[in-house]
Length: 184
Image (spheres, rainbow, N blue to C red):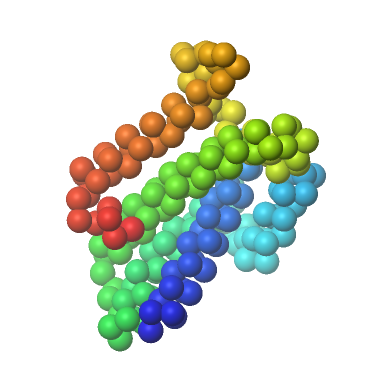
């Protein structure tokens, strides 16, 4: 049972991350012809393509991807409960759990994208197509912090500033939803 629980949870969380990545890339107007962008679109298109015919986009936000990510995070815990205990719980509280799980997944995605961008800046020095997309995605968050905290000695502290804000939001979530936030 633990293996099946791990497999289902991991697959749902990875696909939610890819959907959130697609939304974020469209919102930040990343280069569509970049190989990394093409990979994200191709892996999500079989499900999002038919949904987009029914659910139109709202401005720069891909509402079909957002709705699918919300549905996946909402059904994740009832499905895991069904696997572990054999009980299906259809509770309206699952909507709140799904929304909080989606917010936490978005924060986690931002954290890891900034970490990967920072590490890649040391290694590839701007020559990787993935680094170019990551720069397009994270620059709107890092630029305002860079205006407040300028680079000192050639070291850019804006990534650290964004990560500190993410930690602050994570602790705020722990304060507002003490028992629930740890389970997400």
